[in-house]
Length: 463
Image (cartoon, rainbow, N blue to C red; front, side, top):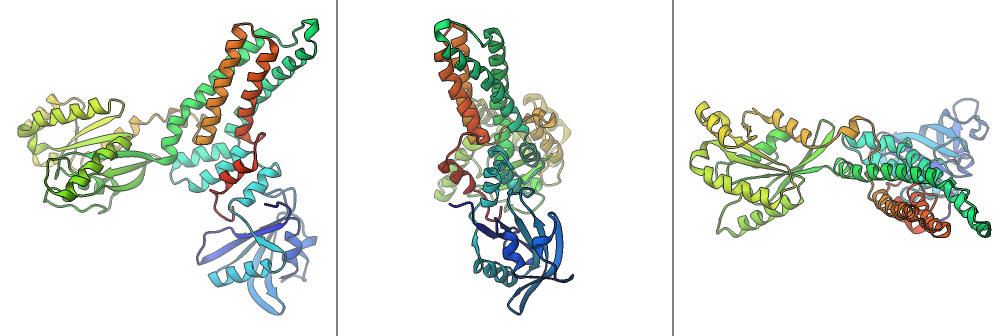
């Protein structure tokens, strides 16, 4: 892939709309557009205009006017990519978009690859690699929490923490490397006590960042919640109540849900993916049996399990219910389990009191009327540790960063052990170099074409 030619792509979503934005970047971007732009004011040339200015005019091919447009001019190095950039705001007709793009493809441009504008921003030093990856996360964010994390990373919150650690470690690495040049004199330029303190600080920060991935990963991808229970206890009604729409079929006939139904909503800025499963019971129905098998698969995948039962059946089913709950607790001891008595609007206070006395932390619900739904959503939020998010701490959401942090942590532990055991400087230097390498992988000081290809291939074209 060459990074010296001029690229073009649609920067807004594909399809017709009120307006569309077409983006060009490269050394010749301004001159290529200028050759086909007629300003409505004194036929001014785009080449002569100041950076960060907008101009009204027409895109023309020979004597044919393609559209009336606004052209934004950004001159290097003060642009998103660090190159000359032009953004053409045209009318959102598919025909107009393609006519303009094809015009410039015939006159010196080529189509941009996925993420190539952001790749050029990285190569030109406008963003480091973790910030560039945050651009994709920001575009993909669909709730408040994932948006907040992506914005913090794009502003360099994560990068700055890693850069500080890397710089401090690099300073000591330089001193230890210097010691190797004076090995015969047996001198120490790097103060070992200060170095031990630095390694402790790095260990603490790395551990915090690594631990944050557990929260960051579920925030980024949504928290899967399995709604389970026997047939006809109101699982589908609860899903509909949570989503505030008729997403699942509701029927008095037991076994209506034969397959899992999934949908996602945002609660308190956190994405939750609810999974309505087939009712668990013994059945000869082949299709329903397959659905029940999938139910257990979804429980395996879920972060949280909601067990729903019909409050009206408690007297007759309480022994069976307690056995089922114990099975789930024993099989999934690490998964939060919310036990909910549904259809509470159809029983009296005496039975409600009995249920509450026999099952600890029971939650009361009427999925049909909506009673208890808000309390349920609050309970789900309480299960997710978002303290670090509220405190605006750095949260790791990228699995590549997580892997690099784990490797850096492993190397730092080797350095720590080496210091404690009085390891020679040349052996310490090997482990320090490896730790620095893994830090550099995160921000892009250390990179290769395969890595960049994998990262930017996941971007949309035009970004």
